Image (tube, rainbow, N blue to C red; front, side, top):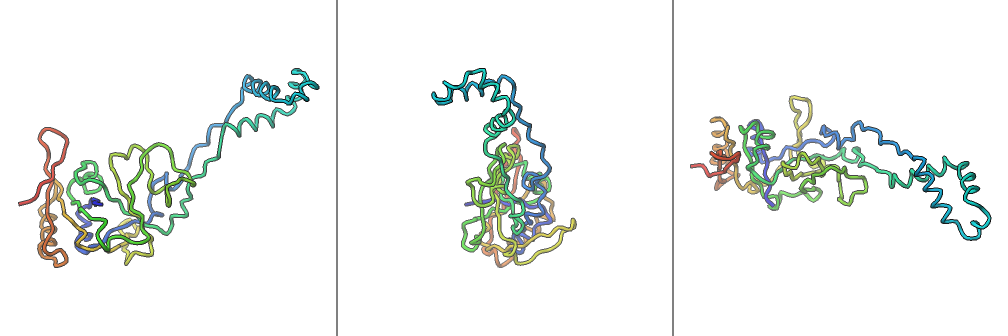
Length: 270
């Protein structure tokens, strides 16, 4: 499967050293994944009419032997004495099975990386490639040596329902579900154990970036952003033309704007 990795100009060491940058899941700030503060579910109220309907249902369901011993009025009087218990049963029936969200603690030993399904998404160029000043790597995720036996590489599912702990997607459902508003990203997420990282390095914000090597031949092409600087262009050219691990070279492409639509075109460089 082809996947695309958007990089800003400061991340060219991914290409230079053939190593992915992964972030510890525990350091991700996604509040849905971390089960941040939530509102209380609206309490269920039982109206008088609903309570009376429930009494009628229960009375009709009485065995014939009991109906002959109790009138409707007598049944109502006795049922009123048990109203709190009856209402509690009605509320429980409406609430259904209580929801249990995935426990974020179960993801503490994992790291993740964001890949995407296409190289020409303007949203991603702006968000992950320094406003079109970075590059995109096209990677063959099926290339021998790219995969780890313990990794999970899977497209993210977008929608409004939050996944529950017993979600059929195993493992890590909370890591592969995002709100519907992010659907335009078309993310393909890679999750690997932290202990498989070969090394790590602190960033300016104090967080660690974890390095995972990949086979250089898994790189199928490199695409330059439409706002790429001459310096970044020269660095990429130098890596692809003179670094022996990329011999006999990889296609270098660039993005160009469509004159009529908000659309990016990818063309080979001269």
